Length: 334
Image (cartoon, rainbow, N blue to C red; front, top):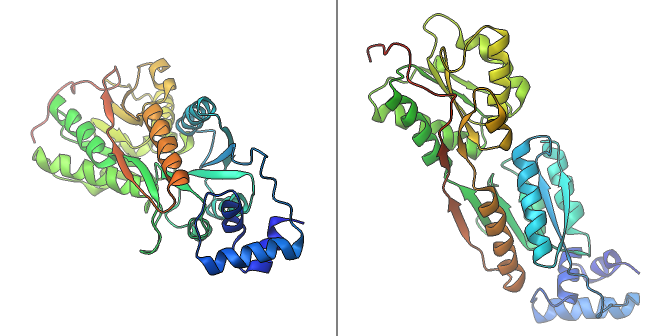
């Protein structure tokens, strides 16, 4: 007999049954009685001695992006040190797959908790899983939930980082600064765009909306924006909202005869290791990947030990200055 049959008999979710039987979830007396009766009715055998709480799951948007790959690697390492095995699933940046993975993992008896690093603002199945008692921590990109659903989050200060990066370019003497941002609607993208705009205003620079480009976090998109950065009244600098996009931009610039940083200074965001091997080496806002992983696992542990208790952590981004951003050859008038 399976947990699914027990859950159907008791009229509750599979994750509720699983966590109740493992002692990880407190439920109302009437609910507990229904579950206990369902266990007896179906003949389900509760293996009290099995180590059923030794697995946690992690959903990431993709593994081809080095940021997500390094984040998953850090989480895996730290989970192992804490005595857990980490199961990693990639959604391929697809909304439907993020929902499907949330549903599948919440119904899996052996999963003690979930670290969720998706790329979409909504996820009805994740909300159902949280409401059903699955311990969840959302990291990097926040998810919109109903007011009655609370979840622990670990994010970074995207607004402050973007403000710092744009201010750095302005301090170098750049007056036309472009922004190549992520997909519209993502909180990370919107916060970085807001930080960019506010930094321009703080330095007395007029915002030119023709210098704001939005698209997916891919190398292909980075290469495709280069023609827009080489037109009349071209920018002398650009803040790119993702290192992997900046990688594509640097490659596309070379093909177009655009010299980095002589013709265009570039600052990226994420701090992927590949950036230090590019030529020129990429100036970037470094994500605190290990700190993110450590905070996520600590937060998940608290949720597992104390269901209903949630926390919110915001970590800083660090500007790492390398060779891809320098003062413009001539400083135009503001």
